Amino acid sequence: MKILRPMSPFRRRMLEAMQLRPYSPHTSAGSLRSVAQCATHFPPSPDRLGAAHLRTSQLPLLQPQVSKRVVLQTGCA
Image (cartoon, rainbow, N blue to C red):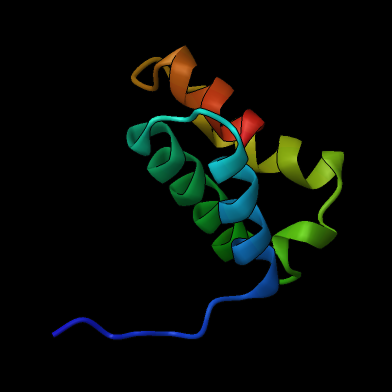
């Protein structure tokens, strides 16, 4: 059974923005996953985070086993 949660206004705007661009479903899912991980890392909503917050969340990704594409996609998301 899947648990349905209300969608935040930020997530709705993000989904709408991705629908306007020709992103593949795989790219959209990856972007949503990256933003969700960032949201669990910081207490404020992702739309209230600044560049310093995002940089801090990307630093743990700079490991040899993490591909550069993952780091770039996380930053773009």
